[in-house]
Length: 141
Image (cartoon, rainbow, N blue to C red; front, side, top):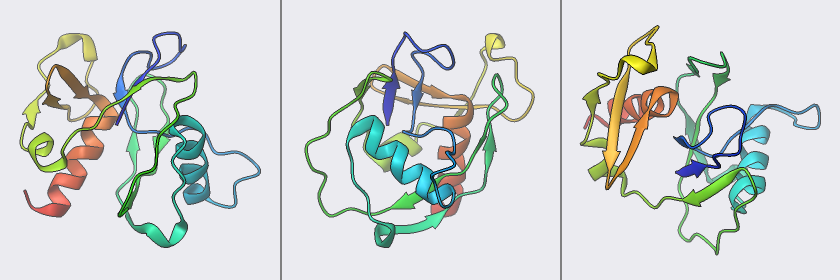
């Protein structure tokens, strides 16, 4: 996961997955996900490494619909973040998924189910937490 730059206009400083808006140059949403991951963290993922897609999630503040894809990689090369990213967070999946909790923060202005996940001192909430919850459900953890 990434910690977004605090200089962004939308979702600044939040813990998220790499991603972004569809471009006319993208052939489909998977192409968008692969391009955005490459641009934000320098990770080149081949379409053949993509093993599935999770249910779409909508962001609360910006109203974006997020399409998430899963991939398995044997190795991750040296990552290189761009200006949208403050840092890359290496969070072990199973321990992270086991921290599921209800989001009690009234500042998050819930319009739908809200969850949090916590690893070390990093709080994952909002759309990113709903994506993780979707993955947790799929893995039956």
